[in-house]
Length: 165
Image: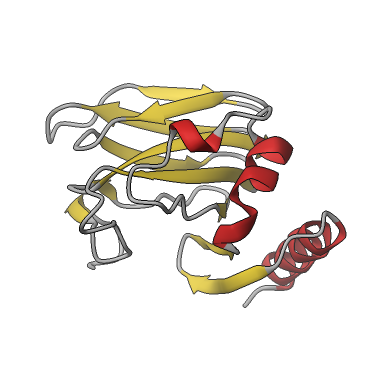
C-alpha cells in the first residue's frame, strides 16, 4: 500500500472514531481505494453526520442501510455496475469525484461532484464512481429493496471492470 493511501485511510479512520462511529469492517485492499463499513445501529447518526439528517426510517425496507465511507483513488474507477436488490444514496464528503450513470449498459456522461453533492441511484441503474485529480471520499447508504433478501457485496452485476473481476 502506498504511503499516501495509508495516510488517507488512517485519517478517515481517525475522523470516524472521533465522530463516535464503530467501524464494523475496513477494506483498504481494493485496487481503486477501499471502504469503511459503519455499525448498522448507528445508521441514523451516520445520516445526521453525512446526509443532513435524512430520516433513515423512510429508507428502511430490508431493515438495514449498510452505511459506508468509500475512498476512491485519483484516476481510479470502480466497475460499471448495478444491483438487483438495492438503491444507493451517495454524498460527497471530500474532494471532487466523477460519477457516470445510465439506465442501459452504455455509460452515461461524466458528472463532476464536490462536497455536499448528493446522488440517488435507483435499483438497476448503472453507475460508476471515478477518482479524478485527487482522492475522493463519499458517504454511502444502501436502500435495500427486497426485505426478505437484503443486498450484500454479492449483489453487484459488473458490466465492465478495469480489474477483471
